[in-house]
Length: 283
Ligand code: C2E
Ligand code: MG
Ligand code: MG
Ligand code: MG
Image (tube, rainbow, N blue to C red; front, side, top):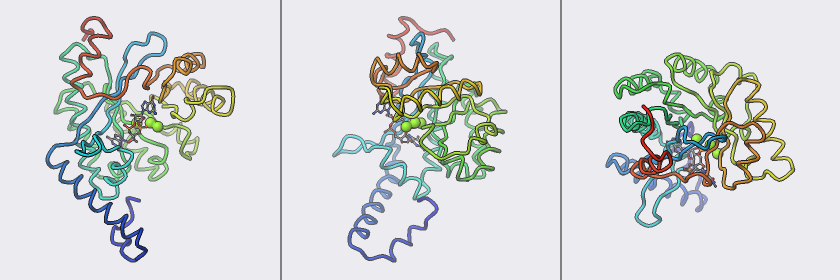
């Protein structure tokens, strides 16, 4: 965990722990170097409106190129970036990169599209976080409503007051807010009212299994909850046509998943958008 001091691990001498620690420290060193050398990439996965299937936005997802395995998964290196504290600087770069892309999209006639970014709890604990977000938006002169911050339930539960205050201030500034992986964490329902939310992201695990059963019931309940709270809902991890139709039937507004598009580098996103709209979008 991020809070834990790295040195604590050296109190144990079980070989496998020692080995894991060496591996972690090695990875952290490589990540720090590669980030400093600007080798990290921010890819984008389109999000569509479930009725029209028009692209309405995209989620920015970190990619770490590796000579041996192609790319190291963020599921592997984001926890290490948190453990080492590197995520604060990496997260700031992700915000810059996203705002730069929002501006580029606008210049290409896609000013209506929003870009969502994942925010780590360590970024909220950074006292300068709110000012950093506002400064980046101003620097790139982007419409703040086109930037969406994604937070998980565990981020809210970790530091409720800090997170609520930060999100209220950023929402006032015009930024959009989404709860990521909704339904997988343990959150108090009361936070749904305290947080200035725009969107609930229905976790992939509930969308995957839409055959009659528990998961379908949970997906339905989350969509109903979102609708009743006046929030937009988006289904994560839609891979099959039936999943899209089912989520649409439940009243879910939007979707993201391999059925529509995989995450792609920005250089591929532009041609993808132009092909899908058949023309340039309207600014
Ligand atoms: P997430 O925010 O829930 O992102 C969605 C993940 O689902 C992405 O994995 C995406 O590639 C994957 N996905 C999308 N559609 C499908 C589908 O149809 N099927 C399947 N099987 N998977 C799908 P990815 O890119 O590996 O990212 C994993 C996690 O790493 C993210 O989960 C997020 O928690 C974290 N992450 C990624 N980028 C950042 C970042 O910039 N900052 C922070 N703090 N975390 C990040
Ligand atoms: Mg996300
Ligand atoms: Mg998610
Ligand atoms: Mg997820």
